View 1 (spheres, rainbow, N blue to C red):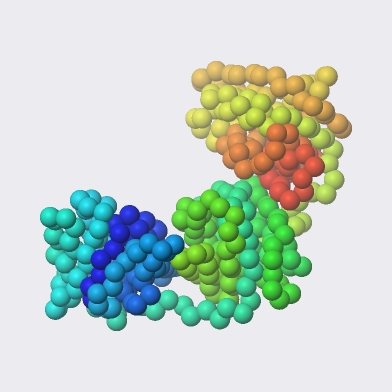
View 2 (view 1 turned 180 degrees about the vertical axis):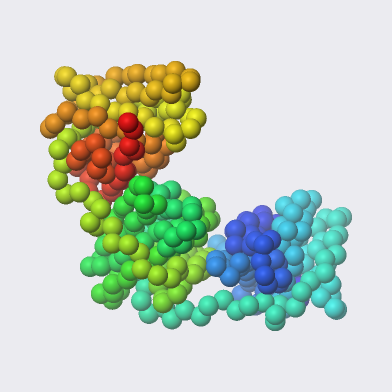
Length: 378
């Protein structure tokens, strides 16, 4: 194998596939990056058997030559060293050449590295996915949907299914739901589907976070293919595979209250900053609990009291308060996470009592919703 390639493109592709490579793997060859040179260009693959990422660098793009293939072939190189080497090479062009016994020479300018390669034949094959049931979604919408839900997945392995995000597709609507049983994030969007397919799968939160980091911010469509145990995201020159979590996701629809006793409309930014300030004294112990109470004239009082440190009280003028008077305590962190995920300048918070979950959503927008369980304070 022998080819010459633009360094910047190589660095970008290596960084993308590195997101799937882990040092903690039971299969030693997976600590490497697989490099395949063919007539069309160069393909890099990284995998940790949960996530696999394949990045393709075409021979030319928009009339510019990116790769010059001298001799097709394949090799697996230690990811940790290879990625550091390509980042620090001196010139814009890199030559990679595999000699006998898998010895790989990497040349750039006056610098030359020799790396011991591994046999590419021993690298596990990526899942073969039948691409008949595809749905499409713009990249920026996909990234928004991930950002607005993935923070609410559980980090505890006691219920592995909750470490994923539940994706449901029915009647051309994609619904993403994440919950750690103390809070829940939900986001819906219309998508383009080919067949009238319905899906209900759970994608690991970690996979979605990594996917979101790799995708560019544009509105190009991404193809998504779901099979029994894998999901494939296809962008231009990029394939991202993730295994699905096994098991049934809990039915969350019954957690979401349909009626409310108290509705508050506030300015998102003002409310967020007030909660942030109130949480300053609540960092220690009792998982930073903040109290909210409604007082006369549409004013909301936000307070926090930590006996050994001190207390903070702040009043926020709401746009409107309807319904019963209310005192409720909740985690400031959960509330801030939820507020940061929402879009829009004003939000509605709907309460159904001091001990019941409450809902936060943007004014006049039903496509997104955050739910938080209050904290008992006596």
